[in-house]
Image (cartoon, rainbow, N blue to C red; front, side, top):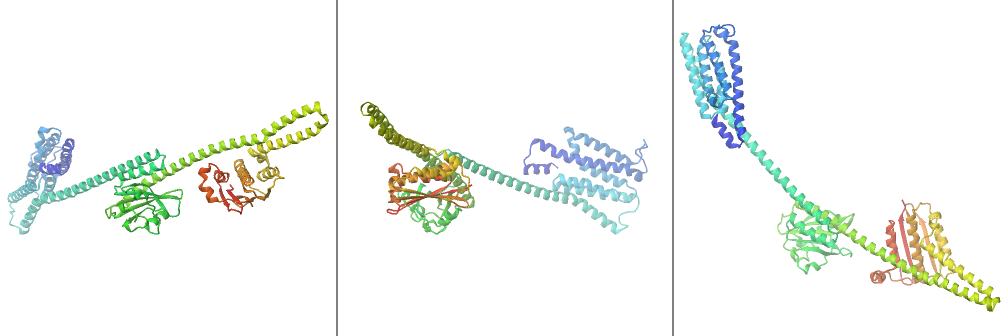
Length: 594
C-alpha cells in the first residue's frame, strides 16, 4: 500500500492534508467492509459451529472463538485509525485476514468450502493498495494457506485428496485464482490510475491552454482599450492616424504600414500617415484600380492580399515590394469612405484571420476618432463662419443704416431747419417744402420697415412663407428688375426655423441677383412634392464663373451664394448652384418634409 501511495504522490503532487486523508479514507472503507463480513459470520456461526454467540457465555467451538477474536482485532484496527502509534495494525491487516479465513476454512467441518470466497476480500483490497509484487506474494500466501487448510480438513475427516481427481483440479484452479487475483486487481488499478493520470494531465494542459488564451485575450483587450483611450483623447486627424500606426505595431508586428486617404479627386489617394516608408514615397498619389485592394475599399470588407508588388495601388511604393502579404482595412464611417489602412509583412503567412480581426478592430476605433476629429474640425469651421457671418451682418446693417435711414434723418432735420427759416422769410414756400419733407419721412419709414422685415418678418409666423415672400417682393415694385413669385399652395406644416431659413435663402439669393446679376427678371418658385419642398431662385442676368468663384472663395472671405448651402444643411436640405457667364444663375434648394 505504501508503494502505491508513493507512486500516486509522485504522479500528482498533493498537500500534506491530502496525503493524510487519502490512506485514511481507504482504510476506513476497508474496516467498514470487514465489520460487514464479521456481522455476516456472527449470523451464520450457529449454522456452522452449533453455538450461539449472542445467547451463551460459554464458547467451546474454536470457529466461534476465532470469529470473536477477529471482531476484537477489527475493533483494535478501528481504534488504530485515530492513533498513529497503532498504524502498523492496519498495515498487517491483510495477513491477519488471510490467516483468519484459512483457520475458518480448516474449522469448517461441513465440507462445503464455505469460506473460500472470503479470500477475495483481502486479496482484492491488497491488489488495490500494495505493489504488484507484494500482492502476488500475498496471493501465494493465501493459496498456500488455503491448500494447507483444505488438505488438513480432508485428512481430518478421512476423505483424502486423491479420492476424486476433479477435486484436485478444482483445488489447483482455486489456488491459481487466489494467486492471480491481487496481481490482476493491481494491474487494472494501475491501468485505471494511468488513464486517470493521463486525463488529469490532459485537463491540466487544457487548463493551461485556456489560461494562456484568456491572458492573451485580456492583453489584446487591454491593448485595444489603451488604443481607444488614446484615440478618444486626440481631436486632430493627423494625430489619430499616427497613433493608429504606433498602436497597431503592438498588436500586429509589421514591416511597413500606411494610411491612404482620398484627395477629393475621383479614385485618387494620398499618404496621410506612414511607417517604414521613405520621404519620397510619402508624396505619391496612387490610383484605385479594379484589383483586390480597390475591391476591399469599394465594398468596405477588410481583406488579406498576397504579393502586394502586383497590386496597382501598391506598386509605386518601393518599400512594399519585398512584402509577401498585406492587410487592407477600409476606413469607413456612416457609409462614407475616408481611405484605407495597409499593413505589410515580409512572411507569406504572417497575417491570418486573427491578425486581420485585430487590425480591423483597431481601425474601427481609429475611424471613430477620425470621424470625431472631422466633426470637431467642421464645428470649429462652422463656428468661425457663424462668427464671421454675424460680423458681416453687423457691418452690413451698419452700412445700410448709415446709407439709408441715417442719411434720410439727417436730411429731414436739415429740411425742418430750412422750413423754420422759410416761415420768417418766405411763408408761401413752406407748404411745398412740407410736402417734400412728408415724402422723405414716408420713404425713410418704408426703408426702416423693409430692414426690419428682412431681419425678422413677423408675418412669417402667422401667414406662412408664400405670403411673407409676396409682401416682401411688393417692396421692390418700381425697380428695374421685376421679381416674379410662382408659388403653389404649400399644405405641409413647416416649423418656424425651416420657414425662417428658407426666407433668408430666398432673400439672399434675390439680393445677390439685384446687386450683381444686372437681371431683367428674377423668378422665385416654390413647389411641394410628396416628401420634399423645392425652392428655386432664377435670374436672366449676366451670370458668373462658378468654378473660379469657388476656387477663390477663401481669399474673398465671404460670398452670399455659397452661404446658401450651409443654411440648407442646417435644416437637413441640399442646395445646388448653377451659373454660366451670360446665361444667368439658378439656385435650387430642396428640403425634406417631416
